[in-house]
Image (cartoon, rainbow, N blue to C red; front, side):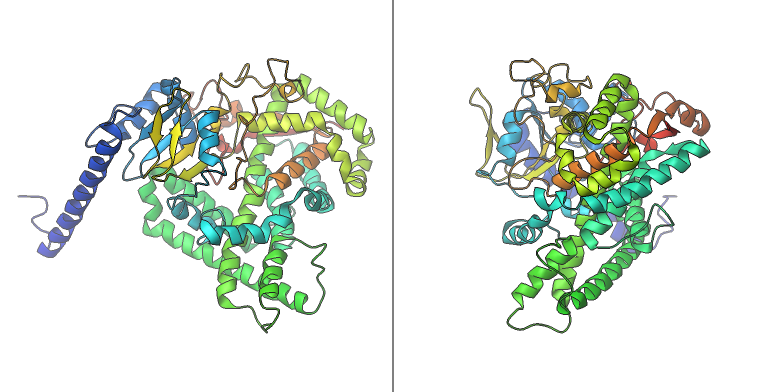
Length: 545
């Protein structure tokens, strides 16, 4: 008896219809890719008319012994070794992705992100970002809608204003130091990345929503919990397969957490609007993201002020603020975690970093918070500290560049070959470009001094090859804030504490096999918003005082 003989005929017909629809879609997708990419002989892995390049992805996992939770950018970075001559290749990963064009060279990256081509963001990003932002944000929109959003928030991230917010960051950093002190006294093993996420969320709360969350000192409020739970569940679904992202359970979790975030920001907007109408906000000195959004709204309604906020504006503002809060904390926390790790692995670098802090701030650690608040310009003297941060971002970039190709845009190599971008999503692989031997002397080595030498030195970086925040019109708004957060934090922390990586102990306790290593490193990058260290970087905090 056939296994489906007991099923209702209508259900069999529906299931058959879905299968037929999927087959038709697959045939169309593979056929289009064949004629536009395979037949012209464009560079790519071995292609299958049935599976496209899905088998090539599996082959990469097997060949390079990659763990299942590694970021996709690092999967493609491993594959980049096979395309070292062209630094460019196409991939057909339907139904999980639209056609991809992976690029791994300075020239291709520059062309992709240039003002001249002005390529926008692909619509494929919107489903990935919807769980975080709740809709079309300044990160995913294009054209006039993107330009308006960018214009509204840009002044809140300029260098002078951000430097003036050092006091707010120091306030949260002082709380952070106390958290680390307690962890050091307890001697417990801790996933330091999770601690860092709470810390940077508190900073993000002040500078985007004008809210003190106190996440480090107490249980997270509902808004903070909702956004991290959403990110964690979204990554869990993505880890299994992108199709899991659309299962009823995860969609229900996203809806529930999204409602919490929406209601929280809605109330914050209403309360802040009342303060604006009462004249209690100085627009010249206050440029948190929520205030910039309200200032733009008030300016556009100055001839006809509204008693309450327009629902359409609130819906737009809530999405932008959710996105900006995420941007303000996620990548910074991961970079901080990798900085502690690299410093622990390179004691000579750590000693030099501490010496610079002694020189700039003096040896009395109790005076550092006051010095930072009163003289934030001292941070500009931390040249070696900045070099350390840039080297960490080179080796462990938290994200990549993603752009939508156009029929009129082709990428060109030095030999005059042309590569079409029509109907492709161009992925600029920062993780591959940042260790490309063509641009970096000793590419896999952690050498902060490369950022302090002159052009005559072989270590001197090639201009434009370092791009963790990208370049061009779609570069990262939050890069100035991130660099300030990191310098303030290191100034407050590295002379007080040591961080001892504890992956060996973690693996024994949790039964993790030796297979969870990439290029000799257990701390490979996994997803969870941006790229974070695997298993949250288990370590022990040691008090130096």
